[in-house]
Length: 126
Image (cartoon, rainbow, N blue to C red; front, side, top):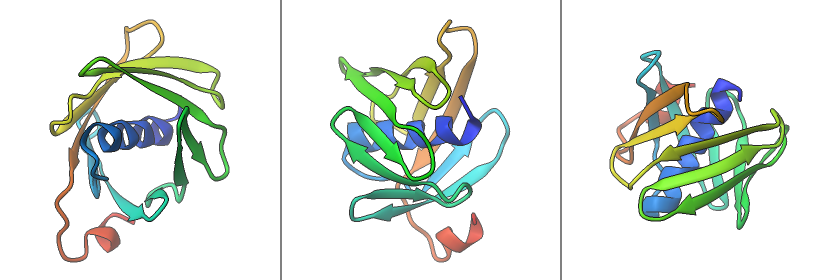
């Protein structure tokens, strides 16, 4: 799964758990921060330019394959990236972090998310 798709999944899972779209996501593994632009029908990942549109079964990305996402219980989620032909799972309870695991649950990726806007947030992370 490509890093930008993992980041987008983290944003979407957080959005589904909290009902709010984050405006900033920070990769705890690389130390990079990325801006997210909420849209009336989804959001735009500013670094990749992908426009993400929620669907009942997951998300559709302009220029990439669909990604299935299913919330499981209060914290867990699972899904499948059709573009990479890869399953994933993770944890997101609606707090400030999301953890994704690869299909074998060996590799993991952690993200901190923020719903707080600040002046110039979108421009700073393009």
